[in-house]
Length: 224
Image (cartoon, rainbow, N blue to C red; front, side, top):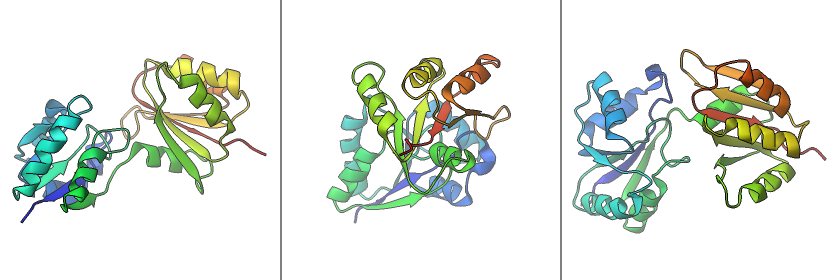
């Protein structure tokens, strides 16, 4: 009998957001597939979980998916976690979920924190219909994607790094200068901040503070 694959959400910053079910699941599985064994090791230590860690990230996902499936078929229970938040959302995971289902292996989600959803619900921007774009391409296809986003009528949720947030805002100023948006950073952490307004207003707000951390951008869709 094959084991079960668990997709386990972990906090995006504040350890208080770890669910009891997530803790119990990580304690019970045979091993935990994670992006960064050091970061996940710190999390496990905090919750006194003695887990066997297995490296599973963007650069080895194709190869390691086969290994994970074989271990699941052998009867082991496996949990997949990301460095922060919910696996498979701009993070590794969906390939092993797909492979597990193709092999008749049971898959169970253990829900919890998700940066995209948390940003969306506190942004004040319509939530009835939205599209998640994750991280934009760095170079090839970037301008095409931005032009597509400029025509999107649903609310748009993006992720961006500290290294490219200013570049993105300047691009948005050129494409959609009046579009309302909310940029959130360091969510659930001590220095969490929200800056809302037009792209130019948000850029000014960022420049007046220390730019650091990971960013989530929630932007209203194009109006008719």
